[in-house]
Amino acid sequence: MSEPVIKITNLTKFYGKQRGIESLDLIITEGEIFGFLGPNGAGKTTTIRLLLNLILPDAGDVQIFGQNIRKSYFKIFRNVGVVPGELSLYDELTGIYFLNYMRDLTKRPDVLRMKLLADFELDDEILGKKIRYYSHRMKQKLGVIQAMQSNPDLLIMDEPSEGLDPLIRNVLYHYLRQFSETGKTIFFSSHNLSEVEKMCNRVGLVKDGFLMAEEPIEALKSKMVRRLKVTFIKPFTKYDVNIPGVKFIKNEPSAWEDLVTGDINQLLRLIAKSEVKNMIFPEASLEDTFLTYYQAK
Image (spheres, rainbow, N blue to C red):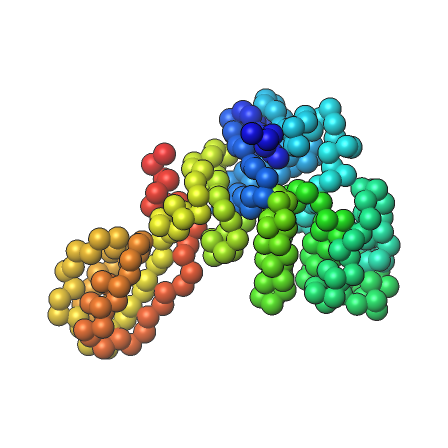
């Protein structure tokens, strides 16, 4: 069996009395798209900063490509593409100078740059401008391109789709799938359940600095919680119902609000027996999923 691409052992970081991450153990394998999932403040960014050797742990160890990151930092990170959270770039550099600068740091050819620029819609005119004149969306595109331009074997990304429009997000997802299919590994954090559902093979869920669960994406999908709100035109005469996977928050003759997991068809068939004035059924909520399955842990 080959060495894992990322091996995290007992990783712990406190900021004074404030927990960043504690006793984290993870193994990420070759070709895997691993989603590190949790609400803001859960410990995702702290973990990524520890992975990148930007801050020192209080305890524990990180190995990438079988080597300790503190002992072999420069050798390891020539083959790692990074999109940091809260992306901050060199405002006085032009976009093209920045890409060249990041390429030269890795000492690897920018074999994917031209295709990335075309697909992410950054042209020569934009690249010739100083980054101080870029919008947040343009800066995020530039950050993603610099991470992937040298075709690294590992991508570490903190909320990489933040600020991108839906079409460009799909471009990013396409590239991440391609990287995975060619045996490259992606570790990315997100608070977006639908994004993780589309992309990941496996997920780790963190809350308050602890890893609450680590499981295949299919297992997470079976637990994803959606919040359904229904308003009826006429009062619903039979609203005292008991349906598996449905937890009523509000159960009144003219209005329902409930948390839904698993198969929704039984609930929808019941709703269809009355005239509906309005129904809101958004994407699954990470917060509701945590509250339902992991609050007691």
